[in-house]
Length: 101
Image (cartoon, rainbow, N blue to C red; front, side, top):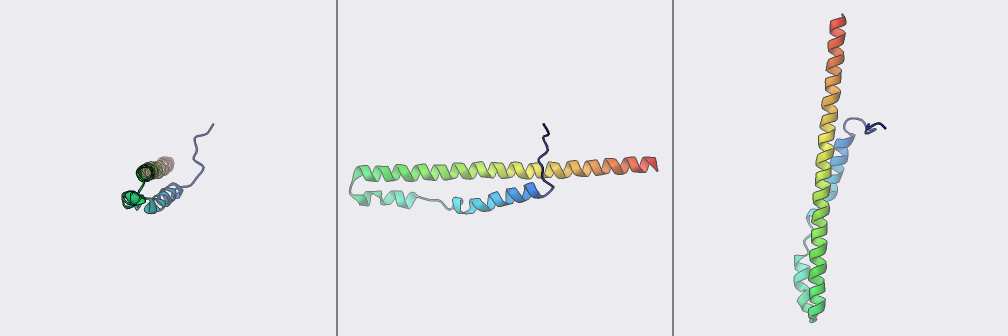
């Protein structure tokens, strides 16, 4: 089986850029204020449940953001490796052509 990514140069970088763009709203997730309003329910169990809910969602959003940022970094690195390899192959072909002339 081939390990070819099946995409051209720049596509991986575009994918990384798109992922990072999607992270913008996630970076603004802050449920601290909502969790603090739990005490206004007048029910300790409801307040505790809201605090747990907010903390879980905030941690989940941060985990997804971190994972997506790692993926975007990997895509950028793969794109750079792709471009460097492509350039090295072109240089090698040009060198062989020069030697044959």
